[in-house]
Amino acid sequence: MSISNSIEKRWSFPPKFDNRSGQIELVGDIDAIAQNLEIIVNTRLGERVLRSQFGSRTHELLFESITENMKTYMTQSLKESIELNEPRIDITDMRIDQPDVTIGKLSIHIVFEVIATKESQNLVLPYYLPNISL
Image 1 (cartoon, rainbow, N blue to C red):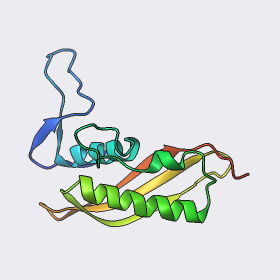
Image 2 (image 1 turned 60 degrees about the horizontal axis):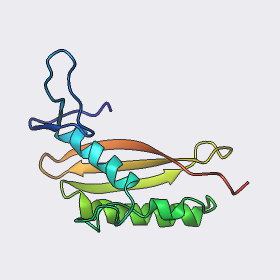
Image 3 (image 1 turned 90 degrees about the vertical axis):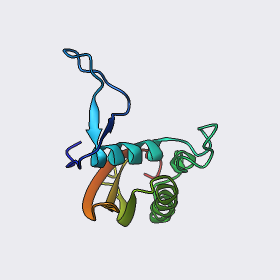
């Protein structure tokens, strides 16, 4: 991910080790937030035993037709999930589009502000759904 970083460093997710030094790979705040957003999108709600509210409802939509109503519901659902599970940011804009209607790939565009630094960031996450609306 090509997102700028702040001062604090954390373990990357999934954890990676540098082959030469054997040290754990560290990422800055912004990259850690971006990784967490991707984890939220790709984790089923209730999948984490001790954090049942962590995750999103995107998997519930896996076999739904890709319509404007579905994209609106998915956007609202993701906003709620992110607001609940990522307290370091405020979402300023989110939209979901389908760049190519012949494949079931959606692009999730998230514009957010890091609360601690007031830094604005843009993240695009791909999400694949089978295209059954043709």
